[in-house]
Length: 212
Image (cartoon, rainbow, N blue to C red; front, top):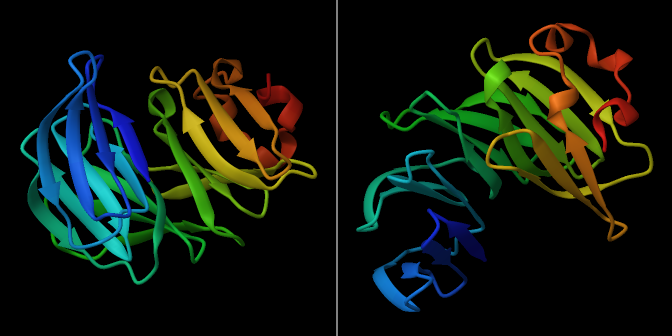
């Protein structure tokens, strides 16, 4: 279910067998492993590769590379995607109920509602320079949210496309959306004159201005 590169040599895996493991790719050996008590549906790795988050009908935070569990949260809905927010102790979970929550990894408090889609939230990415969280809903709409102020900056509908996934490049310059018609759209975040364009209503922005 989950494959995440931690760095150039280490890979994190987890799946339906309710087990997580870290592998050395070059040497083709297992570095560490841990049994889970759930089937992880999605995962995120912190920017420093010291923590991993697994989602299910809740969330569980693990320390890396020993895979020691740190904390758990209940979300009430299956988490379909997750991302850590750079420069903070927080992470975001996008859920099957269409809601996006932000959590403080240092606290056991419930997550705070950040935004909501009409469909399932199937992908999340960040544009660190503008502190913007991008979420993709199965209804075919992208939401852009300032994670510092927790304000929805706007949304953008991709005509005739229903999203299935969203992934960002490591430098945040690009992100790609998978579409229900088996196509992929590449979005060029360099086209954004941040922070100026992020202060404009996204209703005035067209997909062609962002899609490569």
